[in-house]
Structure formats: C-alpha cells, structure tokens
Amino acid sequence: LVFDYKKDFHQQLFQADIQWTLFYNGGIFDYFLPNLRFFEKITTFGKMDLPVYTHEIEDIGRCAALAVTDPRTLNKCVQMDFNVLSQTEMLALLKQHYSDHPFEYVHYSEEEIIARKNNASDAVTAKRGAETDAERWGINDCVYVKGKLATFTEETLRGTTLYPDFQVHTTPAKAIADPKFVFDATS
Image 1 (cartoon, rainbow, N blue to C red):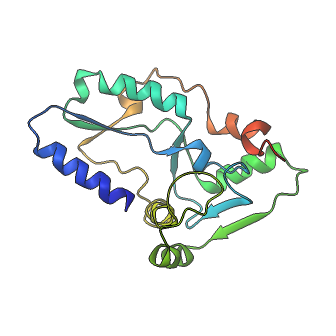
Image 2 (image 1 turned 45 degrees about the vertical axis):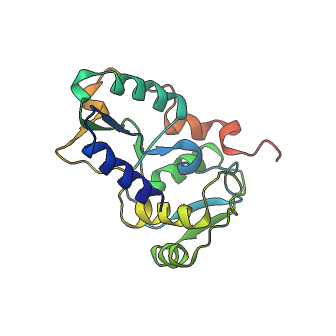
C-alpha cells in the first residue's frame, strides 16, 4: 500500500511538465537495525542474508540535499547506498558488543510475512511508528522476501558513485555499538 502511493506519485511526476529528482534513502536505522526501542525483542525477517541498505536520518538529509541540488541528477533517480549489511551481519555486531546481554529474539519467516501481509488490518499496533499493520507487513514483504529495498537499474544513480567523498556520520556498526541506540530509554 505504501509503495502504491509512491508508484502513483512517480507516474504523476513523470507525466508533469516539470524537472525532477527522485531520492531513495533505503532503510532508516531505527527500523532496520536490531534495537529494543522500536521492537519488544530483537526482530529479524525473511531472508537473513539479503543486503540491507540503511542509513541514519541525518546522513539521509545531507545526501538528499546534495542529490536534489545536483544538475547531474535532473530527471533521474538517486539511490543512497553507503551502508549495507545483511541481518546476519547486524546480529553478529550486536552479539559482539553485548555478548553478556540476554536478548530475546524473534524471526518472521518469509511464509509468515506473506501471510501477515495478506491478513493485516489497518490498525497501528507497533511499539513505535505510524504505519498500519498492513503497511508494515507490506514493507517487510518488499524488503525481506522480495529483496527490493534498493533496486539498481540503468536509470538509477548510486550515491556512492555520485559522491565518492561523502562520509556518513554514523555507520551501522557505530549505531549498534551505542547502548542508547539499542536499548529503550525506559529499560
């Protein structure tokens, strides 16, 4: 559903008589890195070894500002691709930094993601965020079943190619190493 809105927007944009740049940031750390602020347990989904492109919100803003003001991106799509890890690699970092912490884990299989997507309601039951259950399971299906968080085509410009000197302020490893990121402040 979320992606249907984006597709509709893209179609209208392409048909309009204006210049444009589309910017795709991939995932946002809060939703895509293992943490207990947005989830009750360390939660993983679907295919554990898929590449997950995910960035911290301030880095997304800095890169987006570069992309939308760059004449090379006119009438093109830009995919931010500076940070990439699989869920397996993310969990290894979590275990490396918190080896003594008794995390509880939950994994949703591909089959369970599809079933939940097909049966989800418009309720918002997540610990944080505003997406409905139907939207969240649709996103999980797209990312962790279909592997479509970032899709590179001939029409897509990579952020790493456009801005080879761009330095992210926060890497996934740095975020996972930070207890404030991993643990809920009320814990």
